[in-house]
Image (cartoon, rainbow, N blue to C red; front, side):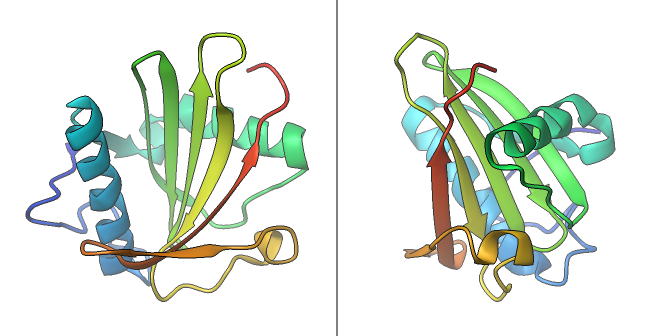
Length: 154
């Protein structure tokens, strides 16, 4: 069942099994607020098992581009298109959020972004491969993020 993410009254709905559920809910709400303010898009997520295609898409890009496999189970996912940019998000039990930004037009920006919820450790599979910058958020506390540019066609 899909869930519209509320960034005014932040809820852990769908994320309860995460040890950092409150911080992950804040991170998810932070993304929802961004897309509402920038694109007037309502950020809606589904349980990962109902959005298996999205999870597989993100995992395929991670595997093919960087030989990465995320060990934490996915909890929720979403995919949508705004202003010619395909977006896919997966939220993991560990507190990790991965997004794929893929501009449809040739030559556009295409990247994978990682965001770590406040209070979580850097996942082992990412620790030696990425440096994380810090960003403050009223909804999510301190978010640590990193990214890489996608080179292939997806």
